[in-house]
Image (cartoon, rainbow, N blue to C red):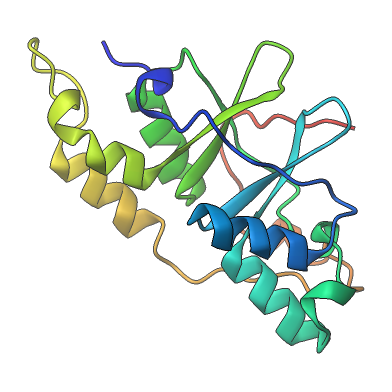
Length: 178
């Protein structure tokens, strides 16, 4: 059975909440990726910032990327998975929580990699195992459909908790640090 560690990207560059959005976007540009995990001093995942998050935050705040901190744009309630988790679990976490990327964490919840819907799609031929279990192209299509909706981005300086009770809530355990 394939595990997250078999298909994840394990050389992931991260940033910290106090870094500028400009530096996070530069990482995305240089690495050819669409997101950067946000970590604390112990390298534990505390957020995730995407290229869309950065753009929407800058547009909403009418500020340049160099004027905004990663903490202003990043998602703080990050759904993570472990390197030993099955690919089916990673797929379920993505589908249920409407996300295309999951930071992969170790035993101390430190960042050890990143798995994306693209990683699952690239390895789908490996995922249909000899026993007939695993992810199929249909599973990938379902996750893509479930994660392709429009989501609201919090505005800088606004109460991000307001209206939370009316939004869909993830039904899986999240890793929080603080």
